[in-house]
Image (cartoon, rainbow, N blue to C red; front, side, top):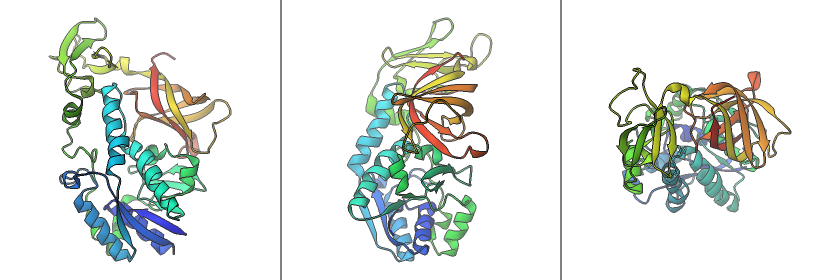
Length: 361
């Protein structure tokens, strides 16, 4: 089988490529250039896809004895990931750029080019498992990335390989060292790759500009502070609200609602964050078809954490969910991912983009 190995320059993708080579496949390595100025995308262990990473990926390919290329997807990345990220925050949403990158770049733009060139599959260093097209959580729960892969269609999953998903991260590093890969001890990348400073608010402010509005008490309607734009807030946020202090009863305040049209950010008690129903658009079912009727499931609304038992139902092109227990910090723009319940809870059923929430059972 001809396999294109996406090599980010990190240890996970290097070992993934090595395992595909060891399995006897015809492998070619490729690194994605995602910025017109790649030198700006790394500060210490932050970010990824820098010139340093491209060099690390090339050296790993040399050790493995496979051809290596760099493909320029900078323009596509800006349009489909960075611009989408900025637009979503401007609309009062909380997007996940890694999820969008998987959907639009790695398993769409990259995969389309790979298959046009005659490759049979794309291998990446994602921590997830695939069993006959069924997407499952990784063995290493702390590194599991099934949440950000749940946007992939059945067809995309049928041509994907996740070679490291069955192994804990410490063992991956040991294997890399044993194979002579210099990235064995390379630190993991953190934060958003195109915001190497880690200052998301400043990054968004430079692109969206000042759109003043008010921070309002959700109970009394009193104006507590002014702000420069709703892009500086997310649902569930506690710090950086710009208010003088806690509520009159001494309890902390949280962002409970964002109204992008009026620029109003409402803050209140943690109880106001409790969500009992979730509606999502853009449903994607990993089996290729929607379930017939309501299904018991476990829902996840953040890449790490935010899970609850629920009943989900396919409604048109979306998903409606009734939670068995409330979740907090659920924001529009986040991904809603459904997993099978109980013993089979590591299997992904599908996903959608959160569009609305309800605070009553």
